[in-house]
Image (cartoon, rainbow, N blue to C red; front, top):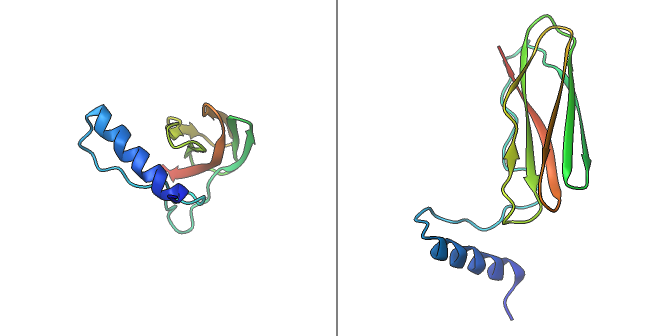
Length: 119
């Protein structure tokens, strides 16, 4: 009997072969997010964001209480391997500004996080 990871890897290679893809396919990642938040320069403060996941929908509400503009982006990692991970477009949050970002997966969200990029 094959292990679930080995079986999933075999299915990924089979799907890539059927789709005619020449890109290498890697096995599914662990539960931890694979992308780290973008580095913020030392001494720079960024907007405060609250992320909420409800079923297959993720929402982030960000408030910037600083004097500089911050660019925020919501990233969503889906539970199913065939469900593509999604990112919102970066949104600028000016001083004392508020922005809401939303994204979804088809069947469930494994992890959702916000990255910051100072202007």
